[in-house]
Image 1 (cartoon, one colour):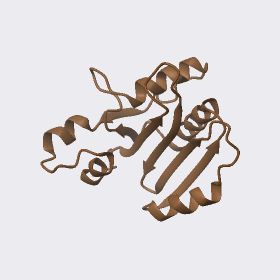
Image 2 (tube, rainbow, N blue to C red; image 1 turned 90 degrees about the vertical axis):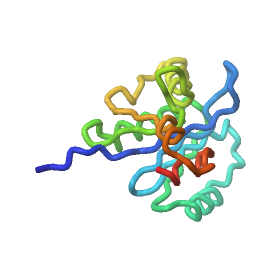
Image 3 (cartoon, rainbow, N blue to C red; image 1 turned 120 degrees about the horizontal axis):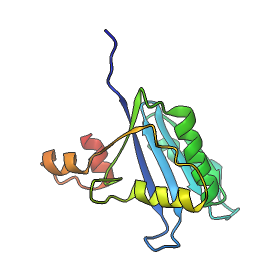
Length: 154
């Protein structure tokens, strides 16, 4: 009998703010082999990629991959490429903390808007999703509501 459980891939974004002209500055995936991080430099050429890779490697629990891009459009294309090439709807699901819930969430609605504004196809359409906010709020009896604490609980 085959194992039909899906493998979780955590997803998170950071943005320049919450207003209409805010952009995604960082997108990240954490998976069984490590982490994949996409950094939007906003066109700043003085970013030292090697220093960032060393720092990421020190914090990583596995293999850390860093893609440095110049703008949000390139970041979204890199996210779409990761989802298309690395995730399989038959074997993976995406999870986040307050990424998208029945009455709100942040990460996926924000991303969906940005993909639309850039005229890019939504890459997550065939991938299952589970939000962890209800699980953590219900079962976490410790005071670990920050992102690191939430992923430690998971």
